[in-house]
Length: 265
Length: 341
Image 1: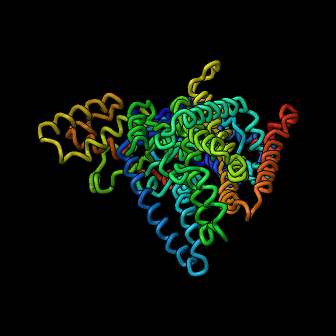
Image 2: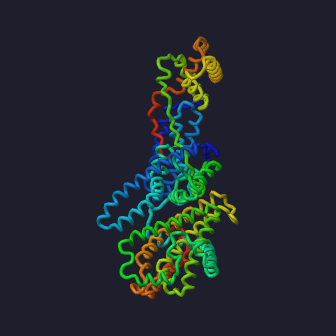
């Protein structure tokens, strides 16, 4: 089972979606089960009032409504909310087409109807086994409908103001070198430096000194700042300057782009 | 290459906004068709945004911008590279009266296999009850316990009961029949995931029960009662279950892929809309069958003469045959595929 679904467009652009694991999906399904039960009981309570007029009709409506709710709940919510049920919203999951294409109604219908096979012989054993064995963590219904369930990543950026507050950044005197640093540092390198600072207090002092030293040495190979600006800087402060330079919002950039469309992530 | 980010955003942002607006419009109106110039503009915007994402992708300092462009490109990709038809406005009448029979005919081979398996089950059940008196008790599920006794006694009891036998419970009975039969149909489709084997077993077992009951009544000399009892709802209910079996077999065939060199995902993608249409049609048929079984089939002579019930069943069968088979000549006609939802 892979943890990622990678889609590469003919234009050479690649996306990666994080596939939802069995535990997250099981929790999402449990939440949906509770929602269906509550919904069913609520509808039954309302329909029971019709018993005064016709007990037969009320009983028939209750039988049909529970059946319809059980099946239609998943189909309707996933169609209206573009691949999400209440449980999936809470667990930040989404059903999507396995090729990244538009999710179609028949795919939603099939994956929900074929749930019966996944439930066999009980407690989602077949579906769970299929998910573990499948390359894309698909249960049988997903395989037939060509859908996957992905985790909607929540990219919480660390509070840089808190992290870097009150520190003078000597790199600011050299805006052209800062620009070069931003251009040469890869996203992974930048995130590594950021994470090292964020987790500073969780590191043993010796390990921290060694890690910061190695990272600072690496960033020094990317851009050479004038010696008089950096020679007295400890490795940790050098790294703080690097992170501040890379992640600092600049005038004219922040607030310029729209929010990431929810249905696309 | 160093990008002047503020200038880059200022220059490209109108294109991003335009693409986002177009995508929102397409999402809000799924049945909307783009004109040629709109489609060309849409494609150009998609390429521009892809190129912008390519430029910004290596920038560590703009994760938010990168995610925004990635998400925008992913949405546009889903629209541009989608080769299936855009969802059209759902028209229930056209779907049921035109699309459903057309899809049925498209996979009629699987329907033939479905009824042959059921017929084998009927013959097996018939022979079983002829050869072994205990066959009924051994095979019949608990829900058919009322058929375990002597058919002649049951017929006598049914015909002698005065008044409205199911008074005050018709709707409940109809709803239980619908729920049970639609549930069985969904199982028949879902068991297609076992490469069709589960569907075959279910169809066969269904046939065995039908054969046991039918031959038991025939042997007891109650053929007219049997026809009057089963025909009004059975001529719709049984074909509906057979169509559900047809769905399961189509699914199983796609999984096996014998004689089809397309990859598994392509095979499943191709049959998905058809399966959804067929199972929807089956549900409608079973709602009708449930109503007929509850409100008509349970009344016997002298309340309703058997001739009337048998005639009603025959008319239904004729209408169903015409309904499912009448458009055969048009299936190959140009434009026939356009009706697909």
